[in-house]
Image (cartoon, rainbow, N blue to C red; front, side, top):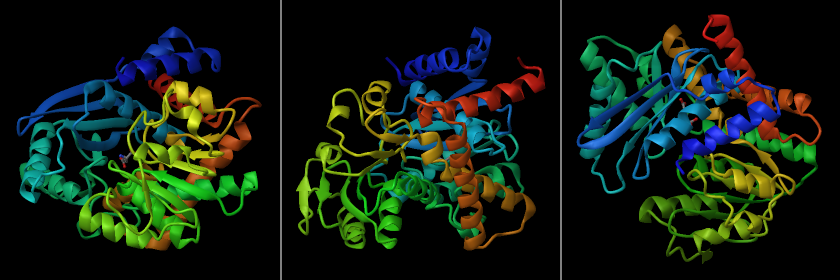
Length: 399
Ligand code: GLU
């Protein structure tokens, strides 16, 4: 079953059971407005423009060997709800190119990034559809994309992509914003739950996982286990994150790390953790391994890391902070970047942090206020996001 079929099932269930939605509302919600299939340097790609009732389509572009249309559609749908939930005036979209860029030279990376923009030149735009970084795409990729777009159209257009380097119109705080936003939420949840000095494990050491480890360590939290695609490193007294980052940057993988115990990457989730942060790919926690999780709090920094079965197994054992809230710091600061590009006024790091914190904790507070007994934070968040999209669609006369 493709990932999007799972999304359809979940949303129909939530829509019917918790919201009393009509079939036509559910079908409107689950129908993407536009799917662009393209080829870039011989690789297959997709841009799914899911819904733009609340604003221009918005969402990252990933380069990954498992990308397919169903995955991109799911990720695009989640962007719709993520933006709506957080009162970010964007719709949702997502792009993906089916490619393994791990051994790419810089030149190959650049050529692919530019080719993607040439393929999508008439579909993206500052008030139309605004790409951003995602898995294996970063600020350098955004720099090439902006540049290619401007070469084609012969004018400056900084806001056509977000997540750019600061020197090219990026926002302060954007590169760590996904992790930083999640940590603001996590700290508030730990406070409310009365959990002190938690042992934290992070699955995945890409942009989100690595920055989360760094920020948590800087704030004296105990990160006891982190993993990448080759192995997991464990130290019950807490890991030296700066050493690990240096090692990872030099060697590319944890497999042969010698300073602490290396265990199988799959074994991270069964460690004695208070907080588990999945920050890798979708569906990494599923019916086969969910019962091994001991953590009391799960912060979903990745998109869709728990399958429905895993969510069912874990929802009474752990407080799950859903991805559409937990990782929304990325698109929130993308929104700030887009505003800064439009106005030409640039904010300090402190301003960005204050605004991010206010926005994401504002959403969390609303969810706590609205959460009904025996209804999870995920369902409450979906209800809120969905309601907002449907309201906009009705006001526009689309429904
Ligand atoms: N790719 C990120 C996400 O999944 C950020 C999207 C954006 O900033 O537009 O939320």
